[in-house]
Image (cartoon, rainbow, N blue to C red):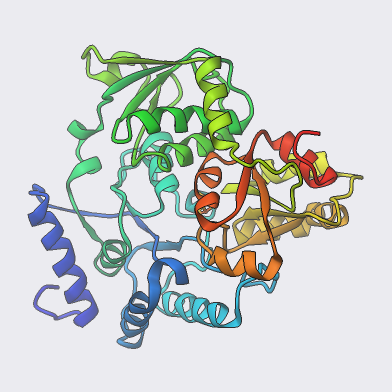
Length: 402
Ligand code: F3S
């Protein structure tokens, strides 16, 4: 590959992988089972990335492993999410280039819900921080948090540099986090993760005290929050995640510093994230990370027979294949009847949110996602943070916790 026998894009991809391996002093290269591409949006690829991806496709490059795409800047089915025609055109160019190389056009941060599903112990090269944490922790697959160029290089060559989270010795817990409050709503899982990562941004936590029946929805919320206030790539949860059947297994029998997160810490974190001083709400965002069918069903139940306020945009986010399932099952009609909009291919954080705010006039938003509550204020939206029920209530009344 380095000799250029498989073409220039592959040669450049292998050069990136080899340089990464040298830099991190990796013992070798590792074949990967799949790639999840973070640089799939106009916002993340930028002009240089867009041109480079197109050049790879024009050169006849072809991905050699299952490759899924992270959210892009707009909904490609035509739902108006407020971005400009220029952004839409640039997004189509990026998506088309990836498709020509064999990528699955899914534009989601939940690749494991749409066919890119590694099994325990398999090596992958994934970008998108929430998916990386979910992969390492819940699936037990192994990945570093890849940037766009490295992920593209892995898709072209089928290899990654074998350092970091690919090595068992780096997957041991570094702090014991005891959850001393019965977490239930996904927003509480997000708040607990946010609370920890704010104090220990580079930790590898092992949790005890999480509910025995922890849903995938809660695990996704926890994964996303750990990677927003910090740069955590993996967690263990005793009895729940595959590398933590016992506390000793996760710690390697070492005694670790212990952090307790109880009701006080949780309430303080929720108050920190709920930074909006306006009581009126004009936009509500649910589906960060993107929802599975079960989560959309739950929202359908909450919204059935109700009407979203005419002053509020209630936008729900899921992968396009989940959108199709909701459409075919009639669930999407229930949402439409209520005034909610199920959006696919994008999310508020990976779109050009400045354009959305300008075209839609949003001033005061709400979400049940700790990750979005962390990022949306920096894109110019005052943001409330609370439970899923709080958010639906706000969408119906136009007020936050009336
Ligand atoms: Fe996914 Fe966007 Fe949230 S990529 S994790 S929905 S910020």
